[in-house]
Image (cartoon, rainbow, N blue to C red; front, side, top):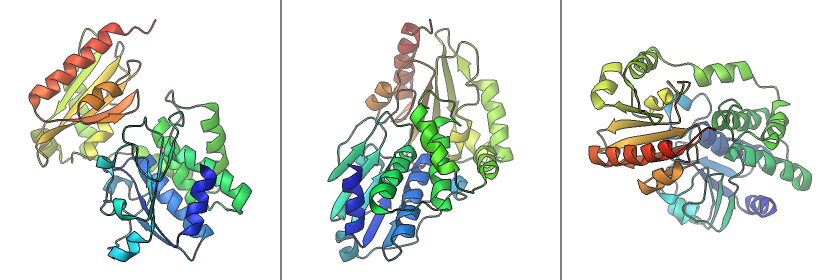
Length: 320
């Protein structure tokens, strides 16, 4: 599969790279890292990064202010990174390319594309792209630049929680070591990742005061539109407080319901220390990993249904 992907990259003069909406470091890192990798090895090619910018991740990469011509994208290669289903692809035109490649590490939700490289045992899509780099180096004389290495490392760090999550494997560390050979500032990267604006720090304090912990070990937090307005935090920015109480004794899983007035629903963020939660997410217009997932609830009643399902999972789960 890696060979076929590289051959497709070599065959096209214009390449559009997409990722999922509301991007995290792995989405940006894989999209922009692959873009930097292609551009440095094939400077004559046109590479376009599609999707809305996420302000908190602009230190990683910026998107292209580009409006494609109909004929251009129809003759192009489209690569979609870190996106399990087509509904979450950020940007128009992804379905109009001449050839489409999916590169992803999420459990398969929506098979799409002419080539699909899905590797659920990988910690991140960026980890997979380091594998692609090694294949390219071996068979196509690819070279990795410092900028591409920085972006791929950022994605691995983001999706492994600084190598603390259970998805960190010996292979993850070996591939991270490959990109760490390049001279980028890891201290600055970590600082930018984990520093928060004062508004977010104060919202975190509110979360620590108000979250509920049930007898079954489920943590529950509602972030209302009024709270977002009071602290000057956007729906997207509120994701930074998802682990505010993750070190609480007895906690098995936790859920945040963020009121999204613009879309008239609740953004649902789920995390777990043991119970498998992505099945719950998939039942509510979402998906993700067994221990980290997201969904959408149309109203308060649906949030209560999600709580009931998570309570059942936590009640039946034991750390012993």
